[in-house]
Length: 451
Image (cartoon, rainbow, N blue to C red):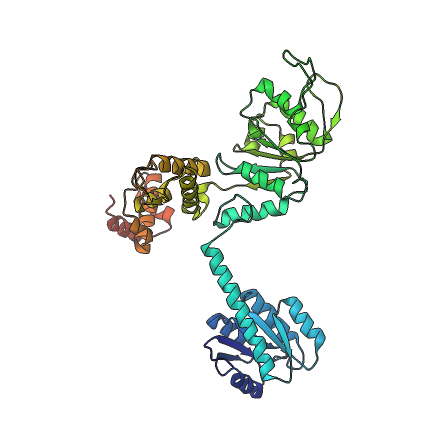
């Protein structure tokens, strides 16, 4: 076999087979375990990429219960470890059961060193490929949704939810601050749905005057009001067969909410000035940055409408809550803006990167994109500074951001100051808030030179 230092865990209770397998894999670092407890200990200690597992382990050496129990625990603790099950001669049912549970492959006794070596080497190679793919995915993270750029677990979870929800015809409510990408996710819902070949029609309920919103949504008949020279279908009819996106639905007038509720319940509309009921089949997606439940308690939003439009609710995190996304998005926007404006490729200075991370981004992704675009247009040099971004300096050396001791000290100091502020400077009460003793509290005050 090829000389290798890779770790291989062999779970086998027969001393003779232990010696034989160790000899078979002489070029590997072979770790031997004779029972389930030892196997799990070695798994925890060495994290082997591949292991062989005899199903007949004590105390059930003549059966398979202990072997299957070991397999299940191994797969639970180390799901990426490739387990090759070794079973009795032509014991096909147990071999298939093991693979169904998650084993990588199986091998029948008696041991054929060449064939088992081939299976083990193939398992190692597959583990290497999977590990490399995982490493590359962390270096070049991609969102599953077109147009959505993210590496944060919070946002990727939202993307997975969108993927699951899209094929269903349920009404979806997207909740998130302004600038978080609600319309982009609504378009993703449409693109992944059964309505993808039909129209996507969007209307911003906050951008249209109250007296015009009804006719925009439901359409109007000729002569319904002054200036209605011809019968005109509304956005709901226009979106028939496709998707209707109602952005900022929290700004919809109460009177119109009742009419929208009737449409969602009965799937028919009446144009302004008309009496004919028109059936419309359309997927409805709503979005808002407001707290609709709180509004319903204040009688500012219909509670029955809220429950009708929120069959599935997706909460979109603010940019400040998306770990690592600020710099990722900033670099993408920088590249796009440089190409769009025919500029040489720009790069961020150290103070710009520190300022980007420190800023809270109240306007979210939209604000970040606008600041980067403006900086590209206005910058006189190839390097984009914090001043070009109009973010100013961060007030500290950005290298400190990577010093764990300084980060801990800063966090501790902030916690102590906050606690003192909450209790009016009373040391004993501040110590109680922080969950420390009075002597420890005095040590912290002395450490951070606080009075």
